[in-house]
Length: 194
Image (cartoon, rainbow, N blue to C red; front, side, top):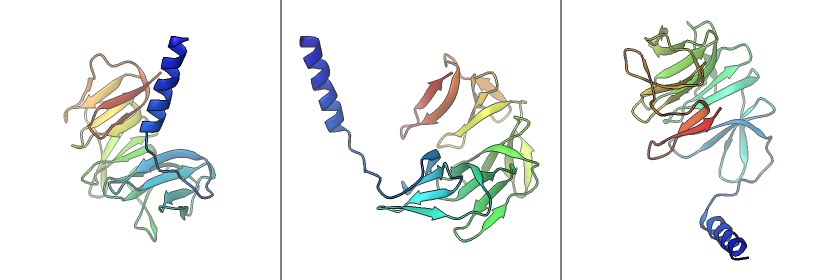
C-alpha cells in the first residue's frame, strides 16, 4: 500500500509540475516537427502539408508538392524534401528548389543557415554557395543532427552515432545503437535506442 501511495503522489507531483501550452485548432496528425529560435512550432501533417502554430491555431504554409520531410533553421528558414526527393526552401511566399544535388532524403540547417543533407546514397553533403560537397570521411547516415555550434552528428547505417571532426567521423564513445536523436537546450544528446 505504501508503494502504491508513493507512486500515486509522485505521479501527481510530476504531472502538476509540468507546464505545457495546450495546442488547439483543427490540424492533421504530425509526421514530423521542427522548432525555430522564436519557439515557433512547425509540423508536417499526415496530409503531407506544412503547418506552423500561430498561438491559437495551426496555419498552413502552402507548398506545391507533397512533402515528406521538413527542417527549420534556427533563424526560421523552412526547408522541405518533396516526394521527388528534391530539397526546397521558402521565403514565406514562394518555394525555391536547391539545385546541384541529385536527390536527398534528409535535410538539416545549422545556426549559420548552412544546409546539410543526406543523399539517397546515404552520404552526407554540405552546401557551399550553390554547390554541394560531400563531407569528408565517407560517413553513411540514416539520421543527421547539428549541435548549437554547427558540429554535425549522424546515426550511421550501422545504427552507431558519429560526430564530425571536420576531417571525418568519429564514433561517439559509450553510445548505444540509435534510431533517432536530439539535443536539448543545454546541448545534452538524447538517444532513442534501436
